[in-house]
Image (cartoon, rainbow, N blue to C red; front, side):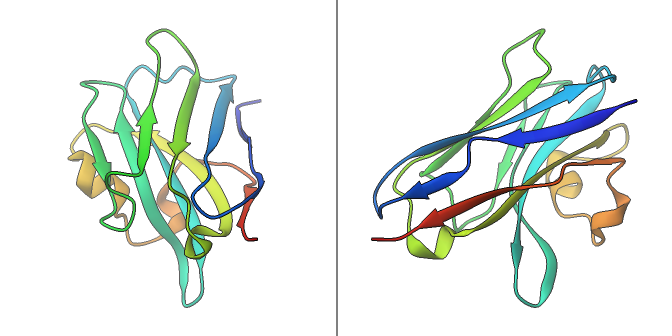
Length: 131
């Protein structure tokens, strides 16, 4: 059975850092893109950052540019989200999702209109930024 599992969430003070991991099992990510998303009020999910496993291209939401970095070591089935300079407004449940990427740009992949369009979706990990 294929699944994606997130880990690495927790409580951190403003300005601190966390690294989230998304590990896939039972599926090869060769032609996939993988993204990180978070729950926000009024939307299913908000895109945070995405990466293509085909060409390594990335996309970041404006709100996290310069603070977050998405990465995927080659030959690994894990995608990381390094979050630095965390702010209270970054608090949320963070989810990873993946899908076959042919025919999309990484920006299009990251901004699909419905959460259910992603073939694989994790259960989420809580990130809380607070004093």
